[in-house]
Picture 1: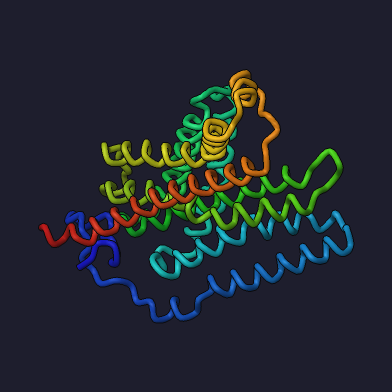
Picture 2 (picture 1 turned 180 degrees about the horizontal axis):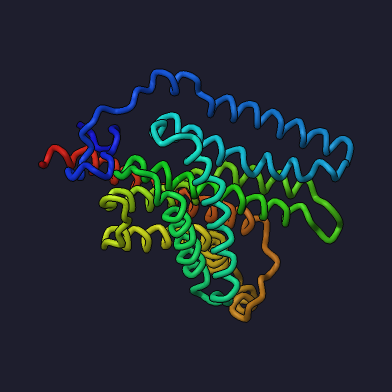
Length: 316
């Protein structure tokens, strides 16, 4: 019986392996609330953007920001809950999304403000801090949820990551709309579309992986800082750092492969020379390829975790 597709034991079960049938999904799965949320939310967001463009009514900007920032994370959370963790309860999922997301964002913001300074290692520091903040938030909000095992950890971790992504995206969207020329709805829409598309393979994926290993290593009501948990934390922090670094790496690759001697000298002195059209296209290509590679690494890691969990009972 698959450890991933079944319900983990309660605290009182000493076996450490799922041994009860999976929860019945006949009532939750067919409703597909996640699809209704996605389609309804997308229609409302598009309508709000269109009305804002047509009327230039700045009062609608907060609505655009909130709808666009929360749509994909909320949809993913409901999908994961309906498909894999309906036995946890909607209240606990909501707490992980809202409370966990806010705690993660606040913790990361405070730590980054006091611990980080511009350097070559800054993005690694960002990855370590933000993943630690989300891990702390997950432990805090899920400590009283009497479940363990990879499946529940993946869902609860991804839910905290989704909440973090939603609140962080709202901040990025708010910053994007503010320019020296006034409000830029175009920048806002571009930011929300990009971050919405990338959300499932960013914070949601990283914290899901970390949560899965954390709950797999859980014994009774206590979380344990074991070697697998620590290594997973370092691994997802590295993925996070690589993700944030793709833009800078893309610039470096463009300069090294296409620049003239003058451009290379300016770049070495800290100046970004005016790029040619070819360099702009190459930068976009390198940046996208970098994000794809990091996403595939994370998805491959997730698949490996699930397959190992499925095969583990066969070895006992």
